[in-house]
Image 1 (cartoon, rainbow, N blue to C red):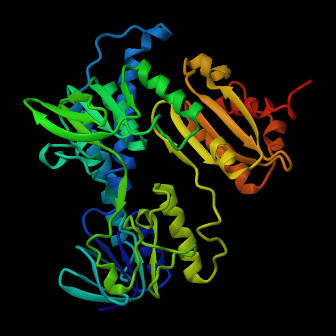
Image 2: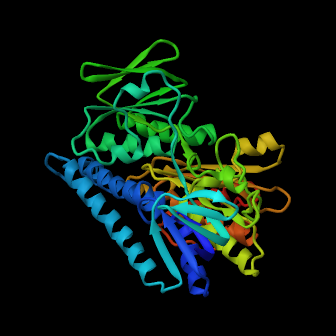
Image 3: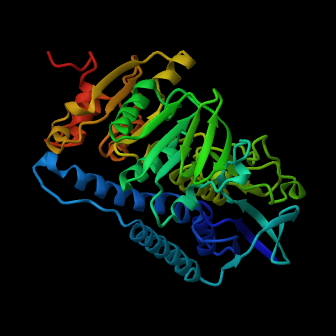
Length: 456
């Protein structure tokens, strides 16, 4: 069969591309191997943040006495938490299916495993399809580290851990990034003992040390055991325990093991070589700034490209690529800011350069820091944990980067995102009239703590 556009994968770039091209009159085939919506809806953002909300409710209830509110014993019904998560996932998944069905006859959807069999040609369910344009949006999956004995123990990944209906006695988490920390804190708040084993010297080791230390302090206060600077070498099942042996010979024992050391692109069984699509050493599809692969007419978007693996980045990929293919685009993959947020509590968010990045690149910056606990709103709500940082170009006064650890950091970072996107100077924040009492007022205080803006 011939199509104008073939989209392989219905994630946060593939799905919108398929519906928009169909709406523009193109004959589109959308192929999805399992569930519509990709990682975000099915195994990532939607289910994870739904369960994070339950974990926070338990945490707030336990600590209500600090605000003068007395509660009884707090018990978590993990099965009910999982049922709620599944219901929310179904809501989004079914909504997508209805959207695809309602797009019209220009969009055909097929459930099955697509593989390249030639130039701009795929095979799925025994049928061959050829497209003038083929877009790969196959996403990624958990990376399996080369740890001796791992294949012989019942370890968990991010999807399996969310299906547990009984609370682990002691969850050992291997990894110190976003997934590891969100789940580690979540299950600690559900009531499990939790140990996080991180190879690097700090959690979130791509961040500045003061940012990492701010969240590490919170984790330790909540009773999460942190084993930093330690690498897992082997794992074994002994009676009712899983035993993780570290590089120094020490052992960490727990009832369950969550492996969260990263993700890898879904290209192993895509047969990219048959289409002339080149991969890098990690298996990611190599693309240029216009999402073009090494094969004429074949493009790739989202996590499969190995770039920033965020839902919002994939969604932005679809906007940029659609405009480029429609002949109206001016932006490219290189022409954008990529903010991000870790949904721990407090949240960790950043956009632009870190202080470490600036030093490594030899970029001169002015830096301001402010404890989150100095914000009036934070004190009133007893949400004082965290820190804030902003980096300015000393010549232009433009913001080069910002990091926030604190309540609603993922919302607050957008103040800097908008400012940087507009190319405005930091004086725009200084001159604004900030509402009191708000967290945003604290962002203004952060910027005004720079010597050039201090009140005299």
